[in-house]
Image (cartoon, rainbow, N blue to C red; front, side, top):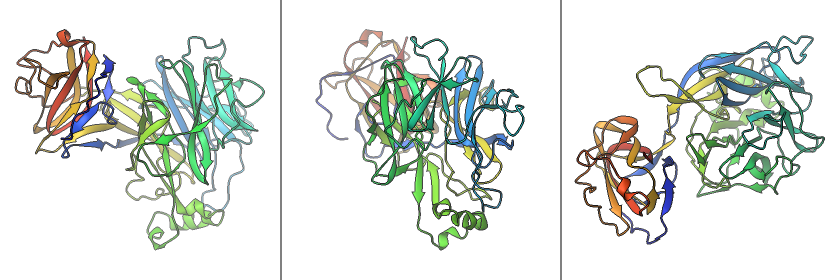
Length: 478
């Protein structure tokens, strides 16, 4: 392993959950170990968007839990007709559906907005010229009455804000846009950050002709900072469409993002075997990029909301070729994630995320994907094994708990070291009971003992020895 850092200022992690989505806690790591991205598993289609007010451009989904109800908002819109020869001219609708478990969904008949002569629909907002409407529940303790739900949408002159007391009936927050510097022609989003005490807004813009993501902050949701472009650690300058940035619910000091990567390829014979060549060629007569652009979903994370560690490998690929994929519109991930029960009731819960598919045609389908809780990235070790050591840190609590998985032959052992890098008596690697299995919360023990309370508040390091194992996260708890 590389030489250890000599920085004497320990990282105070308290009792918070720390994910290994980056090298924030890692000081040294054996070359045989790596940070490995774990794409989610595709599951069932949870909704087919075949209503007249939905259509081939339905998308920009966002989801959040609100008490006993899980709310999902999205836009209903048309791109092309069924054969791809004509672009839709219909207005954009913001639609609503709900669930109690994140698996089974209903589109309620709200009776609020007239569409084509009827209010029997699930539409909550409609506009002739806009392409996004993204909702969040405002948890700011100083939120003004009647603004408990907020939304952002593109409009004349910039990004407009909307308010609602029930999440269904909407009105403008003010008579002017809240942010004017940007392009906003994508899924723009905002949320309240209780840890930092302000709102964040992430939205679309361009630099040097490339699609990018800008960020601004606000204390009151009305006056915003000068927008700035996101920065990336060791990542190429790629075109990013949506951003899907949010605090990770179990560790809100870490932001996770699921941007859509936009790749416009030169036409070649490699397009010929891809699905539905005729539809691709038809829509290319409207605009060449409608056939030559392809998209997929990425993953990134941040500790400060401005600089992100973005993975170049896809988090959600277009997948095996079928009739309606490998097109401009694959990999548009839903904003938000929901903890859902596993198919096996004896197994731990999972995270559910959602992704639209089959755009450009009618109807769009919404598919659920699942992944391990905290399971975006792991420190991965082969059977040959390797070691990883953390930077100096302090903690509160008494037990070290790991989110981990091993093979039947694999294992994890942990050594607690003092600031001098020497093993604390009784907590050496040799004292550690082998950890093996697959658990979201496995308590580490040393000769049957787990109590670390005598070390709380003191600078320590953790030395891990891993073999055929994945380490996703750790925390100290009472």
